[in-house]
Length: 112
Image 1 (cartoon, one colour):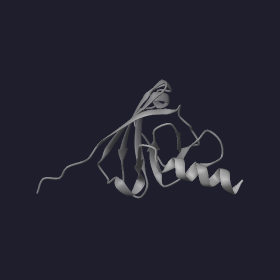
Image 2: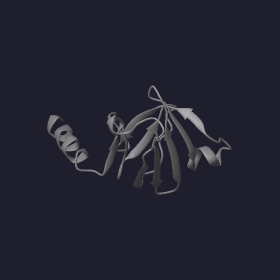
Image 3: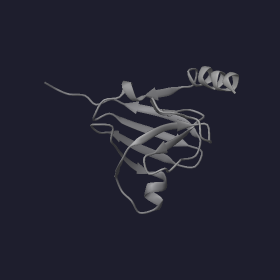
Image 4: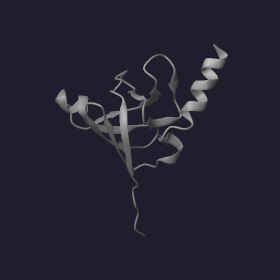
């Protein structure tokens, strides 16, 4: 089991991904999955504002939620990332979206 977990951790570090530590309030992420596209605005204190995909299909516009992390589809979850290609993003409401195909980040900009 330890060898399997070690292989998963090593593999996860090679995936195109956006880490929670790399985003700032006001940044936008666009996550394209096998079935949908999500727009995620980074909020403060670990919150995100999400629209598109499942939320849109359920008549929910921008939903304030947390992001638990990304998973391989089972109980192993990488909690330090917002999203990683090839994995499944899991929101605070336990919604797990389809496999991530592409991630695009649009950083906020401040004009002083």
